[in-house]
Image (tube, rainbow, N blue to C red):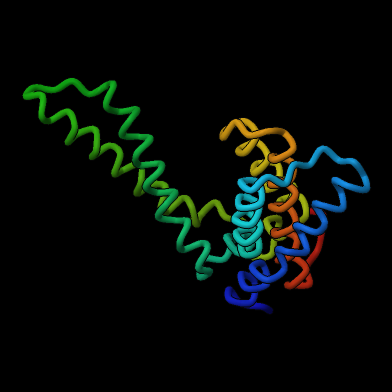
Length: 177
């Protein structure tokens, strides 16, 4: 099976084909795709990330090991932000300490849950269903989160979907679910 370098480098070098596909879909099928500079750069980022993302379900994969601390920090920070509104101690300087202690426990729980809830390697995460979910999330982030146009969101979502699908093709493991 291809390794991390193969997946990511394949994403890096095949992205021009996605740009070509986007242009052809826009020009010949009149799809409302917008290939703005920002959409092209975001499309590249989501495409290359997607080219290795299906391996997030493998505990030894770099994408899994790299995502795990990010998720833990995000959860720990969210728990801190939640806890700080409920902690009211005397002396007041204890409020931040206790709130962060609560956040640290949230981050610790997220660390262990991240691996525990992952399905088996090459299971449902290695599917076109998850490729579609990834593409939809990219579209939603660009269109609603960043406030960019729907056409830019469509292009970015398509790029994300195709990058994820590239990984499945390289693994020779394309399945619907």
